[in-house]
Length: 257
Ligand code: URA
Image (cartoon, rainbow, N blue to C red; front, side, top):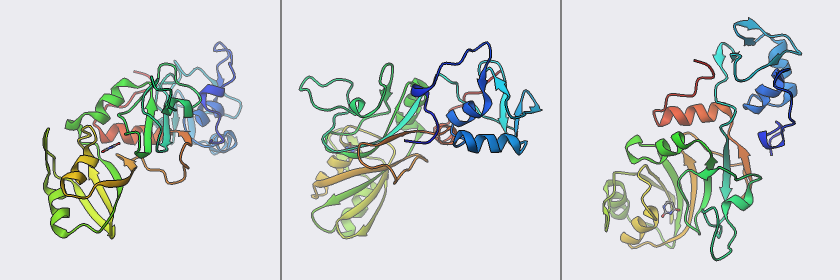
């Protein structure tokens, strides 16, 4: 868990007094509260165009807060979590068979949904949010957001099989789009796709005669994290949300008009 105070542990402060600036910055991914105090004391933070002093309180609905002249962005009610999904956990809100779901692994799920889904046996990065615009853009094939996977199969793939995966595989729902494919070690394949069809990677490997033994998603657009253990999660920081939004062509949420 980050040392910032995530929204779900946030203590309610009176909006009439505003919230402490270092707390607002910390919540939006600028580091611990102490680190944010240092940002403020270095005069890198402005509120409505004026350099902020330590002790400053702000109203996040109406005050324009900038760090190094860039708005800190992201509406306060939008929430973004990055989970390292373990295998054997379902990507649904509730499972009729009573299996563990990805929402059992995070501290809050009311109003939240996953950005796409991973199969029961697939591991790796999964974003959980209440930002429907972002979800739509990240998952829409036309936006071309890359998803990168590491695939383990039983034996080394021939150059012909790798070429087939790269150029497109004829599945029962049509030819797959060109993919980036490499084999860093025999039987370990790195594949980057942007379509996100149901069980796409597994079906692609089935069709070249190499059923998947293990499948791990290691990147969603610009979002990577090799520090989260299976089952761990963290809050996406502001710059990650902005980078992901840029990757799918979304105008980012300005804090104020
Ligand atoms: N492709 C698959 O086959 N399964 C996943 O979970 C994700 C991509």
